Length: 281
Image (cartoon, rainbow, N blue to C red):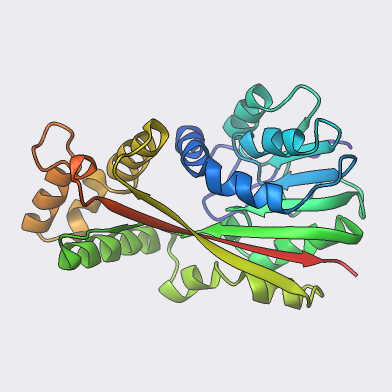
């Protein structure tokens, strides 16, 4: 496998992109559900696995563990910071490449299983990415596409109106940031259609809910506090909310406030995780 020069051209995904901490937080938060998916794939011990868009590399280690350390596992990501993090977190025997998913330095038919979770949606042309990944599969190999909700939705069990306003504000922020329409963002979840159009008509799909209520584990609280409250929300939502709604949200997100959401006994968080699996003929 020869490394090629990574090139730009991804939606919010360039060699300079750095979501390292947020990705680590999400992987720790969603590990129970992601590990369940990996176990259900019943990986053969000697399988050749590609994690396409491996971010900080945790799933590379989970695949290695699932195979009893006998699989050949390759992680690939475009972002330099993510590749550095993956090389630190992945097992020593795993290979981590920095490469563009649309121009992978890999031979056709190299892999038994390709895992691309929260990855192809970053491409300007997600279907082109799926087509490339299909060429890397051997006959009988499986392509696993996954997508957590593009923007996490908080269920405010105590205030449905504020819930709607905050979720609408987040979507508006992302549309403006990337210059994309709501229709284009919705298309990023068309996993089944992409697989079928790429010549993989037999698709199995399942959506799990990542659901958290009190009491929260430490990994859950860190993800919700740091990635959602301070990252996805925070000051950047101020222009998209009425002042009184933003003030209420800021109170819910402030650990020093008596109304801090993560201490509410009726706290309830939902985030979907859709996994589609298709086999190459």
